[in-house]
Amino acid sequence: MVMEKFDTNIATDVLIEVERHACRHSFYEFFKSFWHIIVEEELVDNWHIKYLCDELQKLSVNIVAREKKLYDMIINIPPGTTKSSIMTIMYPAWLWTQDPSLRIITNSYSADLSTEHALKSRDIITCHKYRTLFPEVVLRGDSGGKSAYANTRKGARFTTSTAGTVTGKHSHVIINDDPTNPQQALSKVRREEANRHTGTLSSRKVNKTTCPTITVMQRLHVQDVSGYLLSKKRDRIKHICLPAKLSDNVFPKHLRDYYVDGLLDTVRLPESSLEEAKMDLGTSAYTGQYMQSPVQDGGNIFKRSWFPICSWKEFWGTKGNNVIQFFVDTAFTEKKSNDPSGILATCKINNQMYIVYGEKVWKEFPEMCSWLKTVCNEYGYTGGSMLRIEPKANGLSAIQTLSRYTSLNVTATPTPEGDKEYRARMVSPKVEAGRVVLVQGVWNEDFLDDVCAFPRAEHKEYVDLLGYALNYHFPEQQNWVQKELEKAMNLF
Image 1: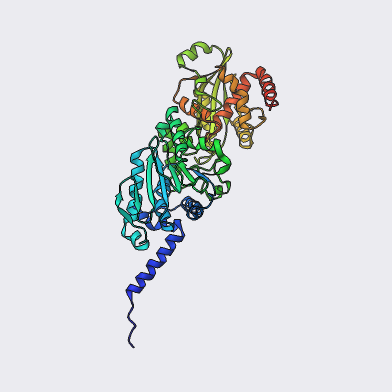
Image 2: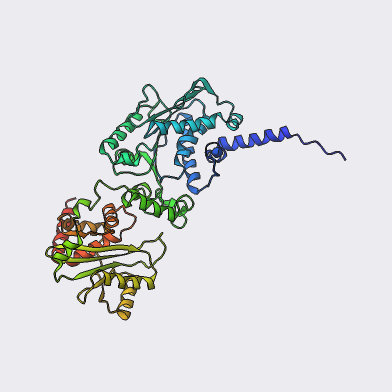
C-alpha cells in the first residue's frame, strides 16, 4: 500500500486561514497571537484582558460602519495591567484589520511615550506574521515616521501628547492613554492643561456623532481627566473601573464576581505587591492609583491641615493627671486582604483631644488580646483608663475574654447611629476647629493618609475610632452638632 503524500503547503495555508479568521473576528485572539511581537516574556492572561478586548471590539462595530457611536469610554485600572498594550499598541493595529482606511489619534502625557506606543504598534503591522495574515494592510513608503504613519488604503495613525497639537488631523477614534502622570496630577495647572487638551482632542473628529473617545488611566485626583469627563457627561460614557482589590468602586458591578481572593489579578498584583506599592507611594497615592479612589487636595471630609502635631515633650508637659483612654476596632484576622484591627490611645486636656498612639494590625483572636494588653501598658494605661471596643460580634467576644483573663477595664463603645460617612461628617467640625492634636510618632502619616482619604480610603478603622473617641471626650457637643447637621440636611 502506497501512502498518500501529505501536502505541507496546503496544511500551512489552512493554518494561516484559521489564524487569520480567529484574529480578524476576535480582538482578544489577535492580542494573544501578537503579544510576542512586542513583549519578550510569555503572556500571563487574566480575565480583565479578555473583558477589555471584548468591550473594545463592541465599539469597533460602529466605528467601522461609520454609525453613531455607542458611547465614549473611560477605563480606570491600576498600573502594570497591560492597559497600554491593549488600548494603544494592539487596538489600532487590529482596527486596520477591520478597515484599513480608519484614521486613529492616540494621546499620552508625554511625546516620548506616545511615540513609543506608536512604534510598537508599527512593529506589529510590519512583522512577517501580520503581513502574512493581513496583506491588504501596507504602510506607505513615504509615510514611515515614528510618531505618525499611513497605509496605502488611506488609513493613518497620528500621535500627540498633552499640550501637544494635532492641527489639521481628524480621526475615526481617539485613544487617550494616561493623559497625566502622577507627578503632573499634583499640579492644578497641569491637571487643567490635561483637561483642556482632552477638550481639544474632541474637536479632532471626522464626525462627532460616530467617533468615540476612549480614555484609559489610573485615578490621580478628583479633578483629573476622568473626573473632568464624568462630571460633564457621565450619562454618555461607559465607565469601567477595576481597582486592584475588591471594593465598592468596581464597575460595572457584575465584575465583582470575577475577582479572585478579593484581587483583580493575583499574578500581576498579588497582596505582597500591593502592600509594597502602598509603602512606596503612601496611602493617598495608592488609594488613587491602585484603588481608583482619588483624594481631594489636602483630604476629603478631613483635611491634613486640621491636625496639628505636638512633640512627646509638649504632651507630657501638659498631660498632668488626665487619663489616657483606648478605643479599639477588632477584626481578628491575619489575612491582609481583609480589614485590620485598629487602636487609638487618646487623652483629653482642657478642650483638646490628644491622640497619643494609633496602629492597625492583622491578628487572630489570641494574639490580638495579648497585643492589646501590651499596647495599653506601653502607652499610659492606668487604673482610670478604659479599653473601649466597637460593639460588634467579635468585639463583644474580646470584651468578655479581656474582662475575664486580664485586669484591664473593658467596655463597649455606644452603638453608632447612621452610616460611616454621616458619622464622619458629624465629628469633622471638632477636627476642623483644631481640637484633635497628634502626638508625634511614626504612625502619624498612616493615620493621616487613611483619615484624609476617607470615604475613598481602603481601610476605615481610624475614622471609626476617631469618631468614637471624639464622641466620648466631647459628649456635651454631640447633640448640638447632630441637630445642626440634620437642620442643614433638611434644607435640601
